[in-house]
Image (cartoon, rainbow, N blue to C red):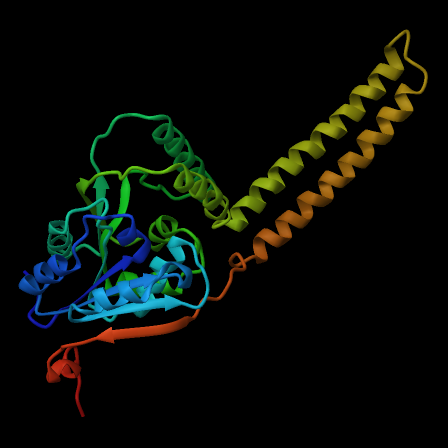
Length: 319
């Protein structure tokens, strides 16, 4: 049961609304207002994709915030920006293209049962090439990062305030929300209720480009992998030097110049890979997070109809 004074923040990406022609902002607000006393709805967008007509339409509904960043940002950065802006005790990321609005109440009720995160997972769907590649990619990122990532997890879910605070201050996995969530390590559960939306060719290529940022979300792990590969290559070169020496000592016929050329190449390649191993170890131990663009708010418009006593909510001590 929801606390009487609990505030609910619902965040959505404008790109998701644009890709969902059936989305009804008025219907969503009516549904939320009928179930929660205090709430806000945040729609966040990049500057190039927003229009004044859309803004007027969305602001016709109460308790709505429209946030436009000053520069284009990837979707996971937009979602993390929602976490920084939301004021609610419970923050729901909602994707109307993949999840019915009734799931909002279900994930909040689940969090009220003692979970810090309740995610909506995709139901069973037809196996496709994209799905198989996606599973392989999640397996690779899981091995690389050391965290178990759920490939069936959609972007709709409810986050507690405690989890939001940890995500906002966690440096590991800044560019990938699923990795941030796994790194936070809070109590979580899932509910089946999402369906994968159809992806256009441009969206697939966009995801392929974004996969490089996802892999780069664990930079020190990449450097650790590089260091071990470098050490293996270095060891292989020095083993090859031993093989060349044995052949020089015991082989009856050797091509003139082969011994000198092989020893020289193997020695310098071994030194090069050893140096790469050392530098990778040093940088992986010192690297805190991947350098990324700092995004700030260019504009924040809202229409609020909270009651006048709203400022007294969630106050535990008054002088």
